[in-house]
Image (cartoon, rainbow, N blue to C red; front, top):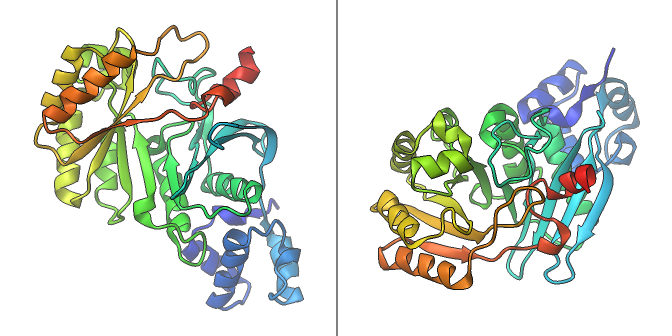
Amino acid sequence: MDKIDIKNLSKAELEAALAELGEAAYRARQVTKWLYASGAKSFDEMTDIPLELRKKLKTKFHVTRLTMLDTRRSSRDGTAKYLFKLEDGNAIETVYLPEADRNTICLSSQVGCRYACSFCASAYAGFVRNLKSSEMLDEVLSVKAGNPSARITNLVFMGIGEPLDNYDNVMKAVRVFNDKGAFNIGARKITLSTCGIIPGIERLKKEGLQIELSVSLHSADDKTRSRLVPVNKKYPLEDLMEACRDYVSQTNRIITFEYVLIKGVNSSREDAFKLAGLLKGMKCKVNAILYNEVKAKGYEVPLRDDVKRFMRILKENGINALHRKSKGEEIDAGCGQLRISRMIG
């Protein structure tokens, strides 16, 4: 019989599994603490758990782990990018972003991506499969192990894949990240980023969790957005904005709109005014970031003056907008770039 992936169990599922072994609920809390707070890689490390129970655990459960294939660290800002091999041989990327007041991990949620945003490297090899919740938990555990002196304060599901396309596994992982007995990361410090999957947004608003929602917008024009983000053909701007406004109304949370500025595509004066008009009166903010050049994509970074003008127009029209600095460009830190560099480099 195949052993159970213990990290893929929710808190309730772990308690139920241990109850079947005749163990009290507090044993689940002990195991949880060892797995996530201490980062135990085997049951033998769980020294305050009776030897007999450890033997039972080894018989029934399996402790997963990732294998590091490559790592690159920026000498400029300390950003580190990791390429991990999963137990089935597939590869994913995870990014560590240290700052003065926070330490963030950018997580992948799928192997590949089915949505094929035209400027993104994530979908280069197509969609392979969803990540299990245990694999997302292992991303954070692996990065923590590589940065032992750093306290992880923030998580962003902005790596390879579309989180709302892997909704159940992502939310299972989110609850473990938020669990005080596990990772103890505040809900408001966890961000899910979507290219605009409306059914996922509608599910998320009912969760009752104060996590952050980020929407990859990239254009306020349907034709341009469909070119950049093809899912716009299925969920066009009018419907997406209605879903976003309803999300804000139901949750009283601010939505962040991500906007990658690309020369000659979405960074003109007209583009800025369209964006300001689209978001007028909405409880939101805009994170604008310069395009991170990807091999074979053919897009370019806009001129500095064009970026300044774009940001000025947004602010003059009452839009809360921030020009976010790109990090780790020299180490291929953009989504999918390290993985793609090994495929086509």
